[in-house]
Length: 294
Image (cartoon, rainbow, N blue to C red):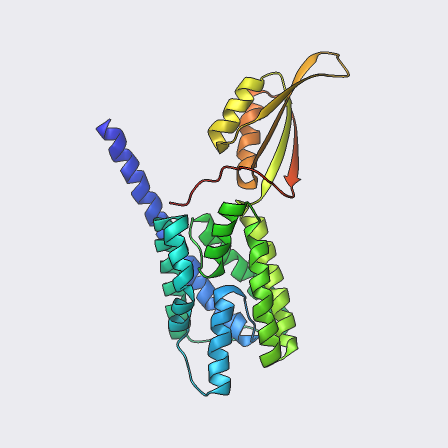
């Protein structure tokens, strides 16, 4: 028993170290992206980063005041961080705070470097790198801060796709940026944000759901493995196979997109002849279990 507890603690420590190293690299990548692509193209990434850049650029242009990126970003993240501690998870929020602080500090100290001045290349590749950095943080159970905290909180409570919520706030930032700095940069920023969101949707699928329809001769085992892997229940129907006129069972369940591949692989190990139909769920109403962030 004591040995098991000790091994469990060791695994937690190893996972936390791995998590820390990976999100540190993601924070550095995000800072480098801001100093190379985002600032070269005068783009607005959206979220707290976009608002921070909007405030610092406005202060520099209209008041000739150079505000530190880190200070403004920390102030903007104060309420979202509180929401994270209160409703999402303490360790999740602490790791996220490290990403916010490190990324902001790196933006203030590292020199800018121009890779290309082609605004379309800046927009596309900058958006891809931004989406990659955000996705890596989310996969490591952390976030880059700002609206991510709020959207994750609303996703947990309402079951909505987190990144659709972010788009609303980003639209407001771009409207203000267009009025102050010109519509061409605001429009390119829309492309930047679209590329970022597309990359996140591909790499991070926690808040996307998949509906499973499984025709199987081993319904009890299938239901048990779905529950074991995803902690979701299942519903069964008795039916008749039209070709052989034999009794079959249809198992219906909904799991997160991130868990779907693992569930399907486990089902095929139980029943190699199982017929499985996966459908992307557009909207889900009712109680749907989600693992709470630690």
